[in-house]
Length: 398
Image (cartoon, rainbow, N blue to C red):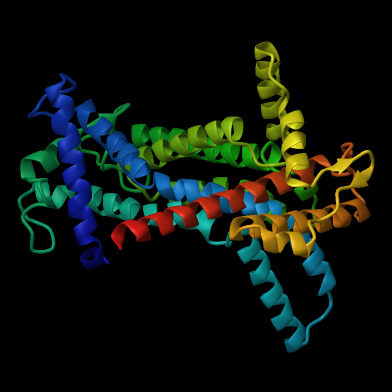
């Protein structure tokens, strides 16, 4: 395992050492002594890693949105094949499920990527801290006299640095009694485990209570069931595993959880999921700002845009789709747009026939259906923009 992790261990050591040098340069800590600068270097390492994986977080948000929007269709698919155990039915169910994932541009593994990317770094830090004693005693580690730039002198500084009296290399199960008292290490470990559990629970509670459409908040929704299970299991997982890790690793974990909580708070308030309670509050805030500026509300603007696209209902009657003979006169862009219009009309028919507990707007659609249509329209716009950029780049190269 250490052979596989060695390149990452060296990378972790480089980041910690250079963050420490920067902190010493600005007057935080002393260059040749243990202290708070080494504690802050682990926090800096966490922030550095989270910034690097920011693009994955954006993909995670989009994947999560797609998963939320497809839940009603996914539940309908599961109900359709309920009780059917034969291989042919199972194969058709899997094919239809994959088609749903493609339609919404998501997959169940996208939301796990930030965690999976961090795990090797997490274990690399664990191994660096676990072997500080060997490096500090000049006995070396795995045939190396140092871990990258982390020489014997620097390793001893990190080893003797402490947070609230507990050294960075100590753990609940294996405290370094030469530097810290066993009771101090245990108290600090318990406090950090509580902090980890609280931040994780709060983040997941915000996601499941405020940033999920009302139609997904039922016991039959597998996504909701998994969220509730995780809210129960994660504190137990932290309690079981936290006692095995050093204080320095727990600092990384707590800092990462706080970063995730801040990201989630910003996302829920600025980019809420369509049809969720957070979106209703967001739209209320935006409409209040628009009213002060004398601008139309978001709903009025969207209705006007929908009417322009030919998907809105006027006077209780739906606008008719563009005829094929008119489509032929337009360009390829107009043809694709008219196809989307016809698709929107059929979606209106389906929405009108489907019962819903949500209130319906004058156009015959519920708030969640409007949110879903808006999300899908924006996805199509992004796809067309990407295709145009690709075509322009191709022309430039030719």
